[in-house]
Amino acid sequence: MYAAYCASCHGLSGLGNGPAAPALKAAPTNLTELAKSNGGKFPEVKVQQQIKGDAAMPLAHGSKEMPIWGPVFSMIGARNGAQAQLRVHNLTEYIQSLQKK
Image (cartoon, rainbow, N blue to C red; front, side, top):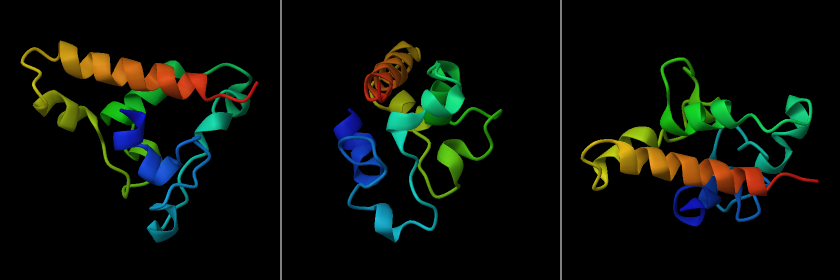
């Protein structure tokens, strides 16, 4: 899922250097340093909110250029929202695994 939805901007390794990055007005976030920039703790809830595009996060992913995946995941075969939530959860766990040690 990460390769399909995130890597074009954030890069396969999460460094923010995906092939679409140069075309963006704002540089994609380096996803490998989220924990480091959050006092050493991975900001799981914030990452989930950004992926889903929660109203509390008006500039999801840091810029209006970035897609909000919550509605897309909800439309992909999810009748009750559980499948969409699972996709968000799985992406969040994968992003957490990218954190620099």
